[in-house]
Amino acid sequence: METMRLVVTGTVGAGKSTFVRTFSQTTVIDTERKATDNTSLMKKRTTVAFDFGTRILGRDMELQVYGTPGQSRFDFMWDLLIRRAHAYILLVAANRSSSFNDAREIISFMNSRVQIPMIIGLTCMDLPGALGQEHVAFALGFMNDKNRPPIVTLNPNEKTSVFESLMVLMAHQLLQSSKSKGNAALGNVGGSRQAEPLKSRTKYQWPKQQFSSGL
Image (cartoon, rainbow, N blue to C red; front, side, top):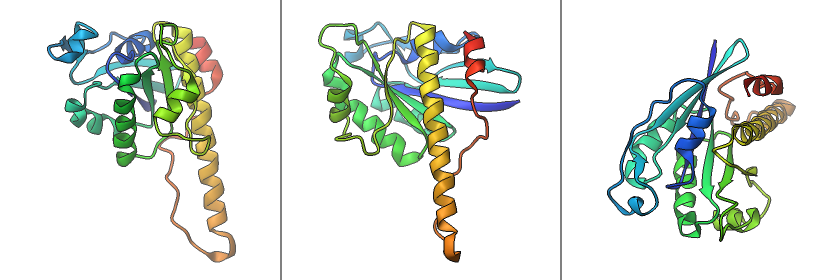
């Protein structure tokens, strides 16, 4: 059975632990502890290492989901988890503009370690003060559509919403894989040799029917 690893990262209180619990069909392993710093103003407990859950998709794929801590003082766990990941989702609470800089720093941190498919999931869109996709994208440093990752509205409490976000990630991963193959072909034209593109860590195609049956 092939294993695929997905990291769910993002700012404090964006819904990472909830995402893992909603998706996993196994008992979630968590490392939540009582919040003792400014985080306690938003929630009573916070992740200090990681959350971990799994789901079997079809007959030959196990998807492992790891939720990271949101606080930068635990960035050693960001480093440990992202280096073994095939893709990641960045969760951002759209109603908390004060956390956008933190989200931007997380993107910079992750991209300095790996170059893998990622999407952005906007949570808390139903709360007062929530900003739209364009505003959040700009705040995260994506000034235009060039190199901007897919952005989805996500409710981590709803299984359908969680699965739909994974479908978007699937489509993005396939697109990136196709582009890499195309660049490799162009590099071989005329006998010239260019640097090889990053290789996908899995050949799995994430068929839609497996997500649908998983619901």
